[in-house]
Image 1 (cartoon, helix red, strand yellow):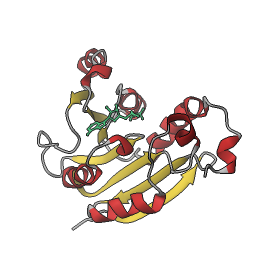
Image 2: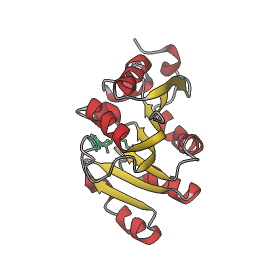
Image 3: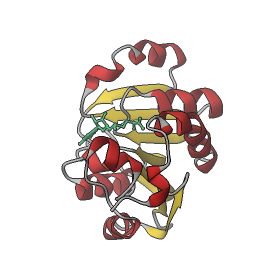
Image 4: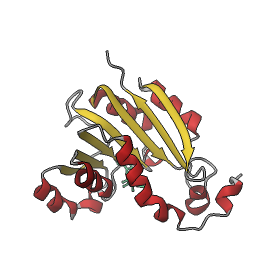
Length: 187
Ligand SMILES: C[S@@+](CC[C@H](N)C(=O)[O-])C[C@H]1O[C@@H](n2cnc3c(N)ncnc32)[C@H](O)[C@@H]1O
């Protein structure tokens, strides 16, 4: 059953909150320098982070078509690169090479979320942070796109299974967004 609050929101709700969400992601990951965006889509968030926080961002998406035009931006700034690969196989990134991983509105589309999170854990440095932003089950997104989404409990369980610690899950933006963070332990 859809949440009551979801029923009253406009259909363009997610478009409207996107800039605010980017700012929030930026603040959450501001201490990181090397950021990995898995399921990056058109690499828009990567571009925002590199422009706003001067971070070095690698975007990975299984469908490379969406960001072909961003390759030029990447070449120009040298701070972002967008790669067309499966996030479940990050063998082109060495162990502990990344300070923060972001997976935004993408984990629910990934065929093997467990493998993706294990890879995220492997490439993060000890103490590095993961942020998963998702649509929750029974949200407006479900009404709009009729996809299957995880609950916060399920997502937290996925992160735990992949080895992450200090996991926190909350619902924000009228409970239409799941915001889950975790860390790779320091030892
Ligand atoms: C809804 S889009 C989200 C895009 C972007 N992160 C955003 O916040 O706007 C989900 C993306 O995940 C990508 N994706 C799905 N499975 C993937 C996988 N196994 N590895 C990498 N990307 C994947 C899709 O190609 C798609 O671009």
